[in-house]
Image (cartoon, rainbow over all chains, first blue to last red):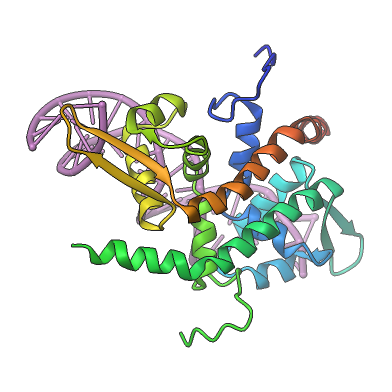
Length: 123
Length: 123
DNA sequence: CGGAATCCCTCCCGATACTG
DNA sequence: CAGTATCGGGAGGGATTCCG
């Protein structure tokens, strides 16, 4: 309440940094941010590209990103309506890290799968 | 099915890289890995350090990390029992990225909070 | 086309109690 | 001390329908 955290304690759930991490830990946020890496995208494009996401979750995730200042929402007053989403500079700074995460996931996938197989095999 | 992914499609939920990302996106995994950064820790130490985690979730998370080859579990045949958890090399390679995430969360917290305030304020 | 709103259900997770 | 087992509440998230 006093926000006098001398050292931000990620392990304290009241700490803001933990809340930020929680957002990153969100299942869809990472995917949406990565999907926006190449540049602005329309709502429908995102929906089509991200496998398994529902309309509801996509909207909800986009709102969350917008709220946290990671993405912007631009409504074009045309008909039919057109809405573009784009990463902010803040969002792009996060993108760098997330891209690293994606690279890690891709690069170490074989090791992870091997470890899983080993673990599952041992009775 | 043919695992001939020229480019691993993170957006396809069947893709292994996405599953790896899902694990990273897990609420507790990141915190546990970071807690293990400094070196081996006992079960009880982890439980005490990570605020808000339940016994069940801690065990479950540790099992998951162990399964994916990110951490090892060492049981000492003493009495009372003592169990140490330690990051593997694979786990440590991930740690680097997660530390970056923590730094980002800490460093950009003010901007995120400001963005939130702005968003919530606009009617 | 890009949502908002509703319903509904799964399963995540926490609390508790018990075991080796 | 380091777990497993069990139960129950509640939020997360999917499918559907309707609106601007």
